[in-house]
Length: 119
Image 1 (cartoon, rainbow, N blue to C red):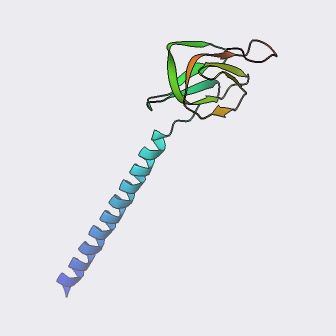
Image 2 (spheres, rainbow, N blue to C red):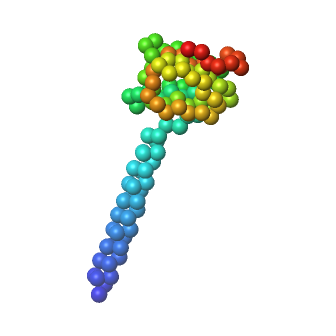
Image 3 (tube, rainbow, N blue to C red):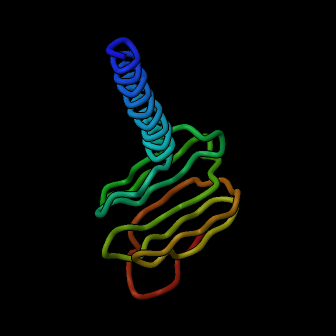
């Protein structure tokens, strides 16, 4: 009887270890997926390049020029000012705003005054 009891305990321990290992493995995969999502930090305009590389960050108040134009899929403004985005499409991007279409960007910078953004 003692052998059966020892075996049962060993099987239970092995089962518990496997359950923990498999649970940790699943959590690790979910964590890796979460890291793949890029979130724009407060105080920056973030441009997501078309080819899925790391986003280009422009600090609040600064201007960036791209030559040749940067091909993007998304532009997000996490600053406190409206930014002008010029290129294939030119538009003003208000604080907290996001544009999600493929386009080329030549410049991104704070709107110079109360008027519209000009190309």
